[in-house]
Amino acid sequence: MRRKLIIGERIMYVDAETAVNCVFAVKIRGSFTLERLRNALYKVQQKHPLLRAGIKEDSMGVPHFVSSNAITPIPIRIVERPGDDDWKTESKKEWHKLFDGKGSPMARVVWLKDNEVSELLLVCPHCICDGTTVTTLMTEILMLLDRPEEKLISYLPFMSIEELLSKSYSGKIGKLIKARVFSVFARVFFLIKSKRNKPVTGESYMVHRRLDRGKTAALATACKTEGVTVHSALCAAFLNAFQQLKGNGANGKLICPVDIRRFVPEIKADHMFAFAPIAELSADTRSGFWNTARKIKEELNAKIAAMDVHDLLIMSEYFHSSAPKMIGYLKSAPGSHDVTFSNMGKLNIPEHYDSFEVEAIYSPTVAFPWKNPNTLVTGTFKGEMDFCFSSNDGFLGSEAAAAIMDCSLSLLLQESVADYV
Image (cartoon, rainbow, N blue to C red; front, top):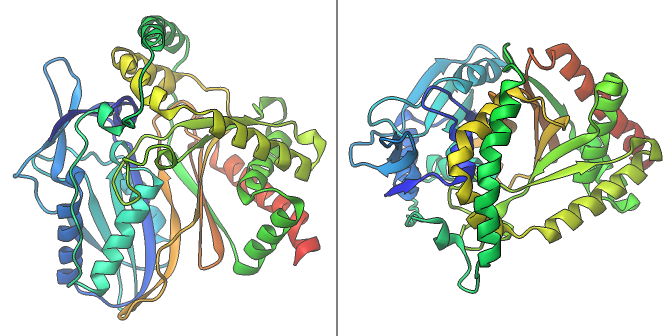
């Protein structure tokens, strides 16, 4: 494989000196051996072509995925596990560590180990994975840890954006010409905008919270009764919290990535992929919590229905020459949103295995180098909803982020637990 990164991958790659890593952690009670872990990682690596490739820039500085027989096995770093919060410390260490070794794969694992409990941290650059990808990889690793004789079926990588387009797709000439023209203006726009602002400087951090099974169930019941999704209720709660705590400094908007697999069947559920179209959502929180959630649900459904992902995929490829300017803009402009919110929903990772039990799953974290790095990820496992908020204290202080998180969850519980338990 030798393939130029598509534009979504290119943005998340940033450059050879910048790490943008996703860290996904699970807590395991029980035992397994290093040999079994190595076997699991070997089989996962043999299934997924991107785990047998590296990134190389050509003479023009354009990054490509390049397969190599010299790629080494996925490395494992074993760390003594003193306590339950050490996965946070190790996650922070992994956020900014480059995948820059010659022949090293674009994945690594940290094993926090003691006699009874372990955490496994899967680390991958964001340019090769989204939330569905890291969930798939972890599911496969856990299955092979328990049943090392199981086999995984490998697949061929796509070599061009055209391979992701349905056979019936036909790009209109007018749209392609429009994309070319816009790409020229984009270079100028992002260059001017990025020069007007300074990049954020500070330390990345995370804020972690969890709703227990009873409170999570009450929230789901309340949402069903009120005719909204849990996602729209979460959006309403966090928009409301930003408004309460930041006042005029709040933007009243959030960005939600949408899983591209619902639009592009060529990207299978168990295949690695990174690019996600986004929906920007806003609402007037003064209309009341449940009315806000209903409006957000309607807006999100309308925006998803209007998405033409095939056009987006093909037209975005005309913006490669603008990519460095776009990255410069993201690094220097605060944006018009409060937070990027990714809801992974119910995680379909088994809880019980023959030799161990998955006790907890922590939502993935990532430390973006953007001026506005506010990122919220949530997922539900064993009936408990888990939240990780990541940001940079040069943009939003960790105490303010914790207050926003607590305010949001308090509002959710106030609106659901009292009436729907």
